[in-house]
Length: 310
Ligand code: PYC
Image 1 (tube, protein in one colour):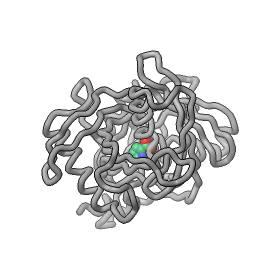
Image 2 (cartoon, rainbow, N blue to C red; image 1 turned 30 degrees about the vertical axis):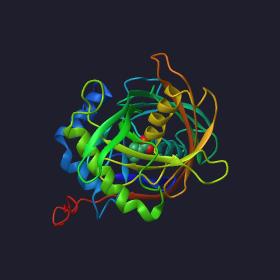
Image 3 (tube, rainbow, N blue to C red; image 1 turned 90 degrees about the vertical axis):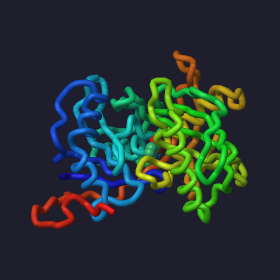
């Protein structure tokens, strides 16, 4: 299996070029469902240690349905197949440029959540124009074990987010363990209390948000991903969901650009345009760097061939 690893603001992406199970044809959402239900051992073996690493997201290249797209892609982490992934799309775009498959300019990429547009500005800098993002519920109260009542917004940016602003815990590296535990409890409470998307979609990510103390940086966030790792980047789909909340609250105008940082200090530039469905079309600009190119080997005699399950 030929893979190329990159990171976007510290968050790793593993692009899978070949060697994955055949997911058949049809809409990408259907092929993503097939991956999630029929090939769990495969995707876990690619993401679990010793082959993978915490927080890593894979970008499995597939044939697009839309022939105007440069590729189709299905994202997954060790615990879930994702609808879309912002940092992964920046990493994928830089990887396609590294392979000589695309050049500077605008390209279309098909994901299970829909077609996104990417603009490659130089070898490392990409703007992703995401699918329409929206807030679906404002100021929902969850009763969270060990924390009590927690108030947040439910928003969609290609994945489902519960966003708490301001964060009850300072968004600093020293508090990553505490925020991780709190965010897991919040995600579990949202699922147990049936709080999610319009069609009952479960919350899969949790965001703690607060203003940044740094000059010129609007805000910083901590994002819990489905694999219980935190996003080292400011999270592209999470930033999209957040933009939808800022727009709905009337505190950020269309076209106005802000810079947002992650808990480790990596940044995205963010803006939006109004969407046709009443939400926002987010634009996310960030940088990725290719780190490694490898062939993964699955030795039948390897006792940890399927990864280390703990
Ligand atoms: O950047 O959208 C994102 C993302 C989702 C999960 C990890 N990163």
